[in-house]
Length: 179
Image (cartoon, rainbow, N blue to C red; front, side):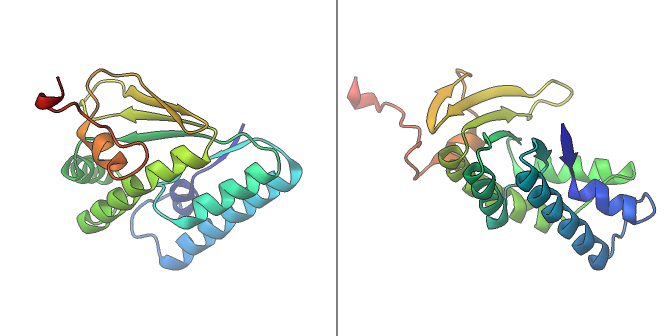
């Protein structure tokens, strides 16, 4: 299946380096990704993209794909806290990989978690993975099909509970006086 990753494409244009990618190069990679998606939708060819799920464009592109007969599947990956994200991205940057400032990482994570309930509503299938445990495979904690949730872990991560709070998917824990 064809796939596109904006960060990897920007690094490719930037002579193979993820470091100090100029805004013009990032803009070019974003445009190329938008063209990639539009062309695959027009041609009705399956594709995959990597997204942080932080902005509206993901949902507009998903709606366009769905309107053209695509089945939408998302694999959502998160960790327990912002500081884990900051630490892991700093480690990746130290090895020459894609980086971002701690403030930007926190903002992206917050927006992404805020958009997860919408993705559950609008995508045909969403599988959420918890990647909080260092050096272990991410574990599937939730699966949603057409907006219907099924929890696959007995211990729902706090990040998932907080993401769903206030939505129709909010986890309602029984109170002591409910028994």
